Length: 481
Ligand SMILES: [Ca+2]
Ligand SMILES: [Ca+2]
Image (cartoon, rainbow, N blue to C red; front, side):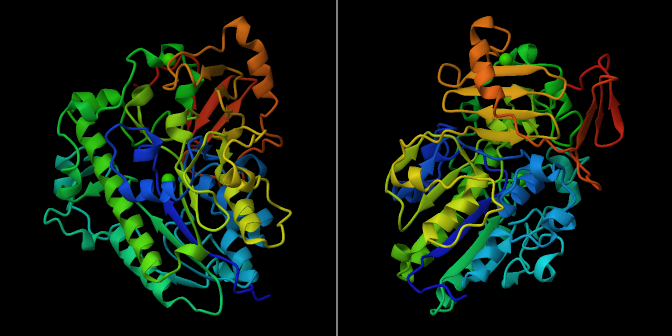
């Protein structure tokens, strides 16, 4: 079917591991992201948007196939979505738009493995045109990486790179260049769906010096933390990130790396913001602003010392909250939406905005009511799942977490936006817990076969958890701090 020419183009921009340290989102007071802020000002930005899983593969599989992790069993970094019989012949988001007459292309990290999803419908042609441009091809030699933080894990590193201020050597710069060329040369007779997936600020957080220069080299860059924060979080909360390459805060402090990591993350964020700016300029220069829906999303957040850890793999806001911005035709300007929203909503929202027929397999809700009027209630909270039985439920005011062993957390996000004070044990909040508990996802499927990496299983009978399929965690084991 050929889409009618009046249908809007879609510019689909993904940012990897980007938390809410975006200027207009207010997650970090010093964050400088002028291009994302400008985009938000001419569209609607969601300040309470959450991923469905706090790591790459399941988050992206959920967004791009429109199903919850609990409905597919994809919770780990593998398998790829097309390896599941359930999704083998399903329409991915870009395939849906291609089938409706859109010209689709992509570069960078869209699915966890890039522009492909692991086989299946149309022999893994999720997009009609792709470019093999991944993460930075230029990385410091190992000895430099060893001198920065994590000599034991090359990918968990940060600092100034390359040293000659040459941004054009960066993978994300090349992705933006390629995407701007597609904007200029896209077929005129069809609407386009152009996807650009940026890899930063995912580790390794390398940026050139000029982006570091935007941030003071002192402790004013550090996020607010409460040293005793984990005293009231259940023991099971540690199980979700039991043994990871991302270092704990203790290690960051002892090795004088906390500030360096924070500045590297902020520098990487500002660099990616500039790449988004290049895409928006290209759209402007091509005269396509009026007829192009721009959407920017991050796949999950990232801790930088909060709750004693760095990285993701948790059910708190720092790990689940993401940037989500829509701008373009059908979207009201300058709105800041506080209603809960899910990445799962992107697929049905884009269908709704373009007026195409519904895809009945999708589990998300269209956000078009909020894109027209931000205060419109969205009755469903945002739900994040990290392996079977562990779920975070985020409403406008509250965050409720329930772990596989039945332990719970509850935070009043208005009074306590840092989630420092767990209220779950207080009897006066029983009704709030009951209200949120009814949103625990059903079904809640176990890990799909061949699941690997960042996976956790729990056996109620023996009260034993197994991390990554090999490490047995018992109640008496000391928590790796
Ligand atoms: Ca990610
Ligand atoms: Ca606490």
